[in-house]
Image 1 (cartoon, rainbow, N blue to C red):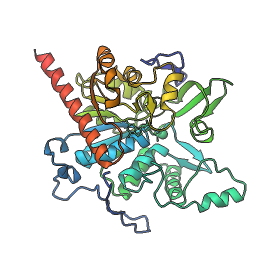
Image 2 (cartoon, rainbow, N blue to C red):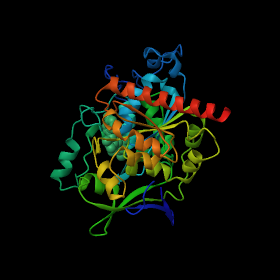
Image 3 (cartoon, rainbow, N blue to C red):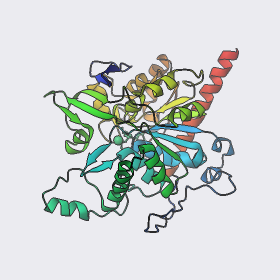
Image 4 (cartoon, protein in one colour):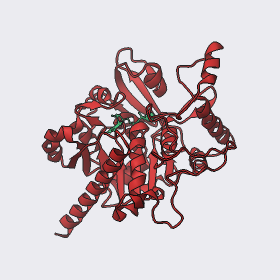
Length: 388
Ligand code: GDP
Ligand code: CA
């Protein structure tokens, strides 16, 4: 992978060959006063592992899992993950390069998608935002001639108000995120990748115009060709407190089936994260497993497949493997792509094929388990290799 660091702008160009468990649970009880709520993913007091113990597999539940996460694809995996592993043993390191300020409010789309999902509050159909949302504020804003291209639900706005207020009082984004997840009763740690501002900027292939992430993704509905992607500020941004420790302490690191260029690379653009993943610990790469967001050459949602092509990468699981081969020893790919297994093994990754479409919680749980088991096996093979 080629990441060019220019004045704090690690850049990728199209020439670079870049080699809750609250599901199904009753809706939580809202106090209406911002009080602490109990959710189904909360651990039992005996410490037997909450939902993890109900998975029927006690051996995985005590493992420490750290996930690199974007929004929807990651959230779908994590809701299953916290049923395989004790929720408090899971740490999500979440992309914040999509964050934006609109109407004076600080919006962190990926953090919110993960938080709402683990709280059992996400709109499952959409994959983001709150279920049962109303849109009165947007309607009023539209009638006053305000900008409404970025839709914010009424209840969702409360999150952004609270976050913005806490940030304005001097709290860090990680402290704010921690406060929000505690108020939702979530046991899983949710860490923003950085407390410093990092912004994904996209240069359009045709006009050469540079635009912000939300303008690309939401306003233009990602239907424009991209020539270059930059993670502005990443060169000088530090990983948020706890991020490096979570990577080093993890038994398994999972790269979620998130958009590689828009969700995972912004996290990897942080120097200390990249160093931690590539360095010091001999087992780091062996314990890291990536799950492909590309199935049969297509993203299930969003522009991940087109962006691969635009960045000079083949739009299939082998292209994804090439992106992660330096940091992950194992790739989990869909059964539909089994014929590419040899190509992927040829570049030095172990791969496992399974059903990777998380159509429901059972599929999410099974995929989480598969990914963890695959990584554990790679670690054990690496150990045996070293000993023998
Ligand atoms: P965003 O930040 O909300 O765009 O979400 P992510 O970056 O986390 O995830 C977007 C990616 O998730 C897309 O490329 C999808 O292909 C992928 N994705 C969504 N659902 C699934 C799924 O069930 N299985 C797999 N393998 N990938 C998925
Ligand atoms: Ca996102």
